Length: 290
Image (cartoon, rainbow, N blue to C red; front, side, top):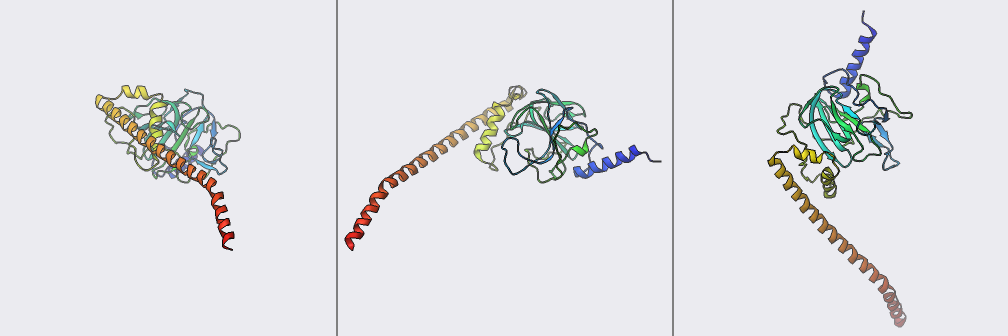
């Protein structure tokens, strides 16, 4: 006779497989932090912008004190450790077809390219990036690079703060994430992806803000520099030189826009002064013609 527990585990496993978009290493995953959930997965009013239009929250938030350790929810490989002005100090772990994201960390503990086991400490929770208070934003992407609700995948139900509701819609992801990287991709050096290339897929100002923020506000930056080889250090120095040139270009472009705006304002002021005189002359000419 099949026990109720066996049936429940089978249903749980099948649901996890369906949600993840592919096979994962285990039927359920562990909680990344033992803290109450302050914000669930789904649409919500953005806590910072307070915009009236609900915005998709592509993960769940664990309300933890600063420096609380977060743990690997499943075994996998660290594929990215980087800074983003929205996500702050971010860590991404590839576990089969499932990609786990840890955002807003004060410190990233797991090393780039390292293999981590379930329950291993991977970050220290913080308040970096676009955050209103110390917490861990934990998100999962499936094999289709879509965020999914982590709640049905947990082996145990986390505590919920009063009033926290769960979303049930899975539109395209809205949180920053690195490109999908196969779990067996070799990593040449135990160092963060600091050379993030100033591409053209977003505004230059945003890219500069992210690149500078990654070095100015990242508590791990000095430690990360100490892990680089001489070649990578020279590369980082060259990259900083590129940032300086881009900043000079942006400053020059901004100065030109300011000059053009001032010239336009002066032209408008001159028009305001001259327009009444011109109207009087036209009126006088019209009366004289009659």
